[in-house]
Image 1 (cartoon, one colour):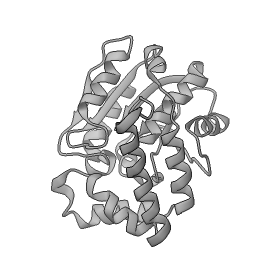
Image 2: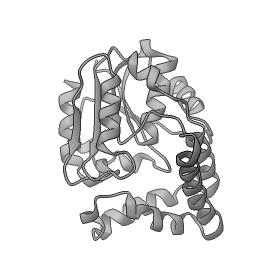
Image 3: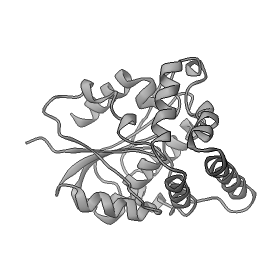
Length: 236
């Protein structure tokens, strides 16, 4: 029996972030998409995933989902066969001015969601989520906005709290002794190539960073064929 693959969505995302990939993966592959529910911490999200997961599994985490994947590995490394980290990060909230700037930016988006609705927030947020050339792709932009709008401002607040209180996962990366794939989009302004190279450098085994051309932060929706091919090679 193939080992199940758990797909972990990011901030305000759901199954839709993974749906474009599914027809491109083998029919016999069992895929499960994690649901963070009402969790307000990455550790709680990881515990929720482990509670519902099979004894042994592969996992791929996108954006915040990559940070959740690292917490899963921290808690139960013996249950994970392979791990893919996509458009994500590993450091805690920075101290000083940099951390304050990140916090302010997240709180500004939350304030829009609370005052004007999640859709209004998403229409602003999505501008930095895709490669610049895809901003005119109305169908893609609407899919992303619709996905965000399926979550409430209360969920957004809880997930922002989780990210602002994230742990340093440097030590987790240094302990990953299973196949690990690191991937980001060429135009990802949230989690850039340099950040992923820093992650790869912490891994015990030499790991190249896969950079998907013409993609931003939402690469699974922007370039699903390219992402699926990388995932297939990783699973093999």
